[in-house]
Length: 250
Figure 1 (spheres, rainbow, N blue to C red):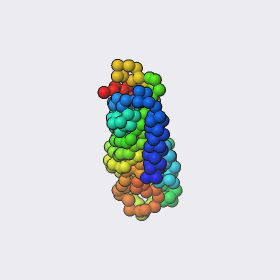
Figure 2 (cartoon, helix red, strand yellow):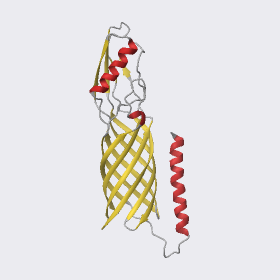
Figure 3 (cartoon, rainbow, N blue to C red):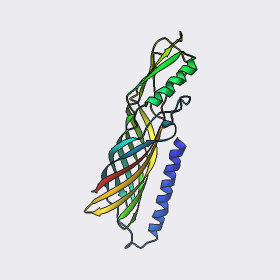
Figure 4 (cartoon, rainbow, N blue to C red):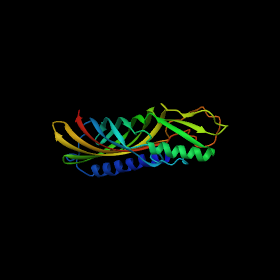
């Protein structure tokens, strides 16, 4: 994970250095001034990727996450020409388990325990906040500008699905056990690319793609008297987000 973040950051700085070198070949009259900082509000869709999206009972990293809505605040503070520190604060919902998901998990536990049957009851949803910060560089062409950013920060979960399992006909596990909903916080990293259009008078439109990855929060299970079957202790999270926003420069 750290290696991937390092590569993203290195690639961004290489692009910065390349464009800065090109700017240095221009005369002082042609050299652009520091860009204006901006703040934006946005909304769009957040899509789970990788293990977070999978619905495979045998893979304990499978998150059964779904597409959901994301909204938040995004902006950047320019400190030298096209160089900035960018930030994003967002809230997203990645859904809850479906009836089919419950059946898959139930069948998995029934097979693992060699039980007469099992009943799975899921509650709550994936709800979280992303708080990310990182270096940004902006390329400008007339009224359009293109941002590249590498980010790091945290995912703060306010809920993850709670899954209660009742096993039938197994003496070693007579009571219901529950995979508890987590409110944990985990390190996150990623990157983003944004296309901005300057509408004039300091206002603009923003179309942005975000990629966020995290090892995710710790998950606890209560009520277990047997270690047979699926046991989730960590829920990895990978999100790809496409958003549209309205920005204002300052």
